[in-house]
Image (cartoon, rainbow, N blue to C red; front, side, top):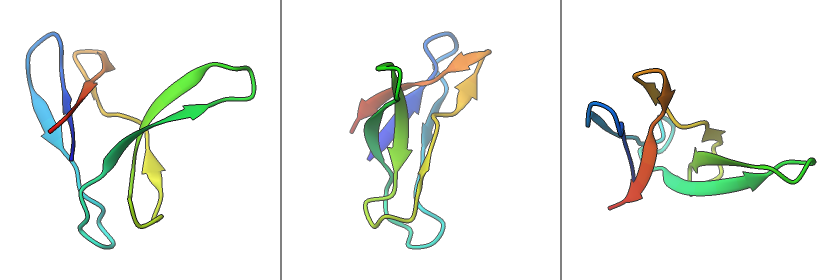
Length: 64
């Protein structure tokens, strides 16, 4: 399961898909300009989300 943690305050978030309750998995999208964006995705293809924010910045993913 992808666990996102705030590097400033230490708060953590675990996420599951609301449609199938599967734990979201960490993934990386490559954009047309070559840059990459970290996302969490449903392993059953129900969609993907950008990582949550905390303390004004993206939370960092750890796989646990």
